[in-house]
Length: 158
Length: 158
DNA sequence: GCAAGAACGTCAGTATACTGACGAGTTGAC
DNA sequence: GTCAACTCGTCAGTATACTGACGTTCTTGC
View (tube, rainbow over the protein chains, first blue to last red):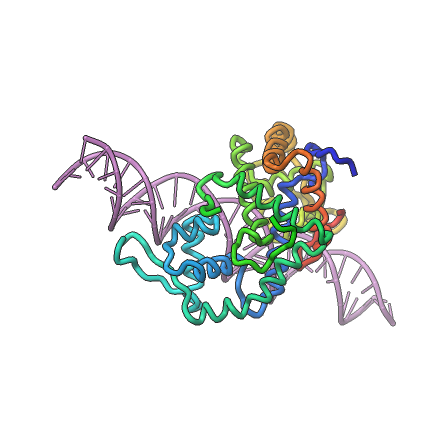
């Protein structure tokens, strides 16, 4: 219970990198359970949420909003389009761009998902004492903002 | 700056699930930069670290140590074996099991990686005020331990 | 107005990470 | 002892997530 941060220890369970990987897995599992009936993934939901706020975003801008690679974003959109919740069209102004929109079906599904989605996020941090949850989220935010800009994938609009 | 935890907000950047996914990506990027010359991944390193502590572990037990699926563990071991840092042999006691060991080359590489590995973990949480790093790690640990046991992948030996 | 550079989307390739299913092997209830 | 239940490793399939490379299209410097 020492306050000293011992990164060099042998156990994986004191290493922040290992813990973050594991917590990410756990969040995915919680999400999949909460949102089971929709058959979506966390990233697909993030894409739809961004498109609700900013309809007609091109793929690179969408990628930057979520912190995903252009390639991954394109693949996610392909799957969402196949399900009929997203549609893409070419930009008349810039023929390089493909603009993405939620379909009415997509907007309806997203609205219906809201409760389950909130529950997933809440459940993830529920084991923390209530008074410490806000600080944990602030710590996460700070680390994401500070380390943003590693490699090709960068978040815009922090 | 309210202490109230607003999970229901529109912005992705206040959602712990989103932040954890993004922080995991960031850790991978930091790791890959620090350990570039070894050409390894975070998970491959975790496997090797466990095998250093517990030589001759079977694949399912190894999976449980790291919190990985059996299938993923098998694939990671195949890649490590191909590189010559791990070897597998069948158990004479239980013919279902394949026991994994570090090769001398693997042990040597792992020893050589230690500094870079420590640097990656340290860099991940470096942006936090020094006094708050231990608490952040405690929060991560608590959430991982509390939510352990979601789905097929479970950590043993917490 | 045009050549150099940059940006967009895509492709191929690779690595985690999961599910469901399966055969081979072991264990336990009786 | 036998057979049902379980376990281990693997396979096929799918979803994130990255890199390097490429053709197309736009922007900029001049």
